[in-house]
Amino acid sequence: MAYRRAVSIAEAFKSSGTVTVRGWVYRKRELKDKIFIVLRDSTGILQLVFARGTEAFNVAQRLNLESSLVATGLIKEEPRAPGGKELHVQSVDWYYEGAPYPINEDAAQADSEYLLDVRHLWLRSRKMQAVLKIRHTVFGAIHEYFRSRGYYEVQGPMFITAAVEGGATLFKVPYFDDVVYLTQSSQFYLEAFIFSLEKVYTIAPSFRAEPSRTRRHLTEFWHAEAEMAWYHLDDLMKVNEELISHIVSKVLEERLDELKLLGRKTEPLEAVKPPFYRVSYDEAVDILKAKGVDIKWGDDLGADEERILTLQFDKPIQLYGFPEKVKAFYHRNDPQRPEVTLSVDVLAPEGYGEIIGGGERIYDEKELVSKIERFGLNPKDYQWYIDLRRYGSVPHSGFGLGVDRVVMWIAGLDHIRDAVPFPRDIRRKYP
Ligand code: ATP
Ligand code: MG
Ligand code: MG
Ligand code: MG
Image (cartoon, rainbow, N blue to C red; front, side, top):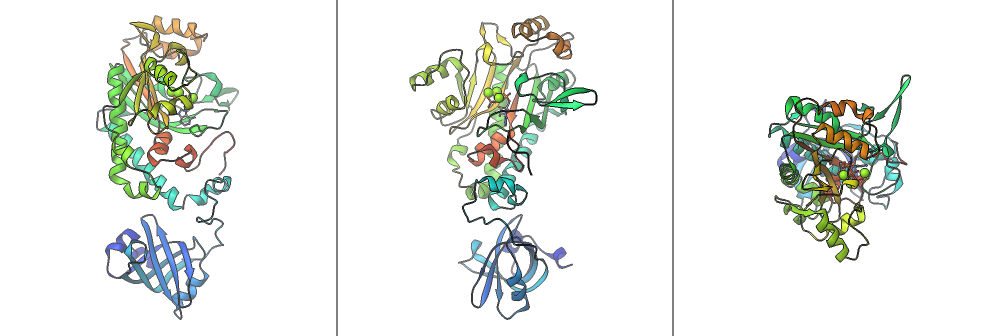
C-alpha cells in the first residue's frame, strides 16, 4: 500500500525529489488550470498542486474538506506556499472522499455551541490540534517532574464514600443496593500512601457537580495531586513553584509553534521561574481594599478578586495563610496564629487565578477529630482517614493542581472548555 511508504509532512519539508505524503484536505482552491489542496497531518500542513488534465486532478476535483488521501509528487520550493514548499502531485495513490464536511474553520463558527456539538470533528482543527499537543507536553512534564524527584505514582479509587471538598458538589452514583460518590480529589487516599512510600503523586480525573457555569469550572477535570511526608508549608511552596516552572519551560521548549498558532504571547511565560511572589492572605486583603474591592478579613476570594490580585504581579503568586473557615477541615492551623491555616493557593498570572490548592494537613489525631466536630461534620464519616493519625503519624503536606486550568493559562485560552477535548459541565455531556 502506498500509504505505508509515505513520510510525514514535517519530513516532506526536509526532503527533495519525489515523496509520498498522506493526510486530510485542510483547504481547497480550484483555479482555471490547477487545484491547490493544503494537506494536513499530525505534523503540519503542505500545499499540493494538481495540474488540469491529469488523472490526479480529476480525483482532487471530487475531494471535500477533510477527505483523506495519499499522494506522490515532486517537492519544489515555492515562496508563496505555506512553509515555502509545495508538492506537485503526479499520482493520487489512495483516497476516501467522504461526505461534505460540516465545519468551515474560516467562518465565524469559532467558540459557538455548534463547535462543541461537533467536538469529535473539531479535534481536527489546527487550533485544537495545538491545544492537544500542549496538553500532551503538560501531562508529560508533570510525570517527569515527580518521577525525577523520587515520587512514586499511585492510583486512588474513583468511587468513594466521604467528601473531601464538601458535600455540595458530590455526584451520587447508584452502587448495587447502596450509593457511592465520584471522587472530588484523591487527597485522602494519597495521605494513606505516604506512610508506605513517603512521596506520592497521581494524575486522575476528579468530579464535582459545579452548579454554575464559569470560565474555569468543569464537572470532570484532570487533577494532579501529590502528598509528601515530613514536608511543611515552606517545602510545599518550593515544590509548587518548581513544578509549575518545569511545566512552563517544557512547553516553551517543545511547543513554540503551537503557542504561536494560538496567538499566545510568550513573554509572560518566560518570566515563570522560581521564586514566585509569596503573598499572605492578610496582604492580599489589603491590596484588594486599596484597589477598591469590597472585602473584609475572613472573606473567601472568588475568581474576580483573584483576577484583580494577579494583575498586580508579573509572575504566579503563592497566596498563603487563609482563615480557618474558608479552607476545608483537614488544613492544619498555624500553631502561632490559630485563626489561620498553613494553606497555600497558587494563582496563575494575567488574571487566570487559582491553579493549585494545598497546604499542611492536620497530623495529630485529637486535633483532627476536634476540627471535624468544630466544622459540624461527623467523625464517623472519616473513620479510616482519622485512623491514619493513630499509628506513627507525621507532619505532611500536599496539593492538587488543575491540569486543564494550567493548559488554559499556558495556551492563553478564554475558557477552560477550550483546553479540554471533550468538556463536561452542567449543560454539556455530549459528544
Ligand atoms: P475553585 O476555588 O476555583 O472552585 P477549589 O478551591 O474548589 O477551586 P481545590 O479543591 O483546591 O479547588 O482543587 C485543586 C485544584 O483543582 C484547583 O486549584 C483547580 O486548579 C482545580 N479545580 C478545582 N475545581 C475544578 C473544576 N471544577 N474544574 C476544573 N478544575 C478545577
Ligand atoms: Mg471549588
Ligand atoms: Mg478555591
Ligand atoms: Mg482551592
